[in-house]
Image 1 (spheres, rainbow, N blue to C red):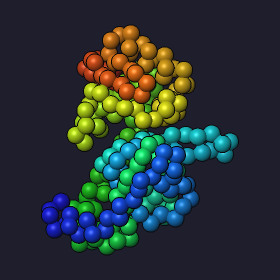
Image 2: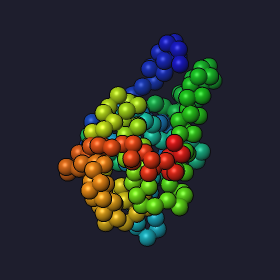
Image 3: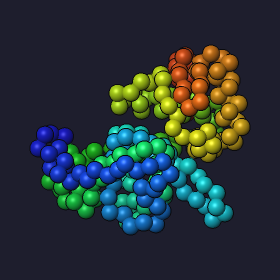
Image 4: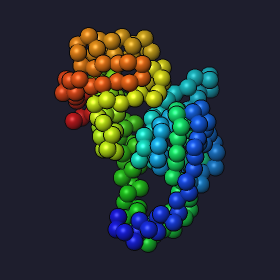
Length: 213
């Protein structure tokens, strides 16, 4: 986007935060009036089924946008909760719609973001092994961090193991077992929530069927 378009977009920004760990950005069913870009921290999106079971939909890092899946129904279809201290840039969607009529580049960027979300959601729909799923999660996380200027090889997993397992549609003990196997192979080291990728090429090869890399 050119500088004039970015200046117009900047006028719409509302800085929100800090939002503490455990506090919600929005809840399922809330009226949709804005999308938000994560400036700092990690946001988890999830839904709760009729039986009270939680289903994790994704984890959103700095530079990523939440709320796009609410455009169709005018209500947020999921919950968004801070996993650590989160700062947001909030954009009024009605105002963005008006701006998009004058700035074609903005509309194109929104379509790209929506397409990216759909692509991530479909990655785990196949019949993949637990090893492939966890490898894809780690490599995907690494790539997303690298794209934002963070270290791709050493990072904090701000989400709980149970949340990772839920997202990957695996049992928590399976995630722990596979992660332990990766450590025995010498591919990763794990100290509490800090993880280091020692042999990313091995993980990328394992993750390739999921990531279609």
